[in-house]
Length: 282
Image (cartoon, rainbow, N blue to C red):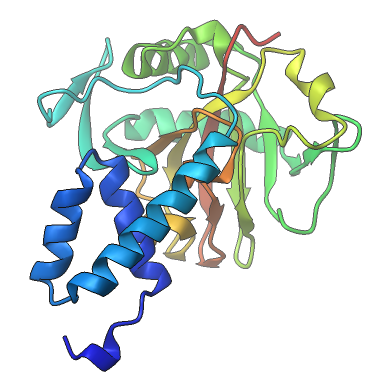
């Protein structure tokens, strides 16, 4: 690499942080940088400044908490969800994210859509000032909530999720079903409740923080509608029967769980979302 081109970029600094969080020692990261053509002086200076800043930032982070998640030791291709074998399609470590295949059958997808359709209304978001709910311009879907254990189908799916993610069913919010018509979207956001907002203490009385999200695809649109993760440069296609799960062990952007629903360009997208809390949700 020419000396004149050796300027530390944000991408390089993020790569250094990713290597450190993956457990690689500084000497190993430095050797990799030198092997890639970085001069020793630039590599050392960039490594030291990046890791120093990163450590200072981490020291101010809220404490991590236990989170739900599948058993991925041994890199399994399939997971036992009790009444169903679920495929492991993709895994990310940062953010903590898994794409599942075959989580729901086609009949289950159709049944959830049929049960939800008569009860749809404009989707709401949490109103962070008071802890209530409100219509928000960033979310343009229609939706409804099933109460936990609402009917035999919901009970079966909730039991499957609990086994798959090793998290008590009672720690889950009610299943939410959403319909996105052409042009509908949900702009990038975090699912945890911002500790700085005045309404958050009221929200947390009902089970603590959210610590995980499972998005299940019930009906695929003809075009568009991916679930996007801007910090991870990832798009998950809304394939019927599949799902994407991600967890966040603290209410902080360092979890890299910023995500959104890209606009549907043709057809309709239907999803079911399950949010998981620290404690029993009531």
